[in-house]
Length: 206
Image (cartoon, rainbow, N blue to C red; front, side, top):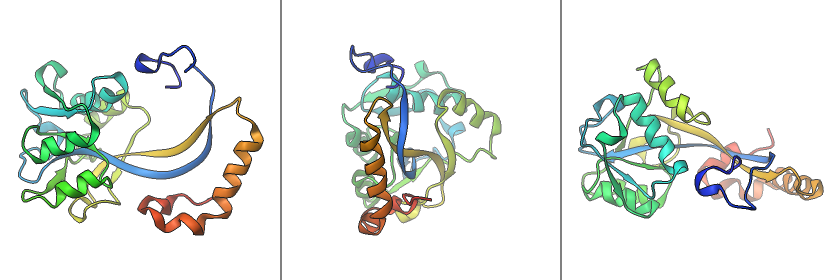
């Protein structure tokens, strides 16, 4: 979006110089499979694997192409199941219409899928298992890193997945008083919102 690439290439949308107002969490996301899936690590992905996506725009596809780079699979060997909606991707996996989707473990759709008869798992992305695969992933998706899932259904906690900082960003032309006062409020009122969401544990001034 900052570079005004692909679907973000609007006349008034960019490119623009960005700055951070507040880092609000270090959040996990990753690639969910059904509990009875035979896909445990990227290397298990084979030609003909069905991957659910919510659209085929560049920003959406980048993490999936990163996963395939780790797996050593070409995107043309994959069956892409375009559900048209983020939560619908999770349902497609839970119902057996797709094999893999990308979803944050804390989302309601994932918790619902977790409670289904076959349950869920996440593909393990521990870089120590395949350093070259991890490097291939990060070469495409440069803003991610890897780490254990720390929030979500109990059965996925501890599975290595992808992590990234979530933050409030702004155009650097924004009034600095607005930026300062928002940051000040978030810092001084942490106790008011700390318990509203699991990842708020990472939202302190520190």
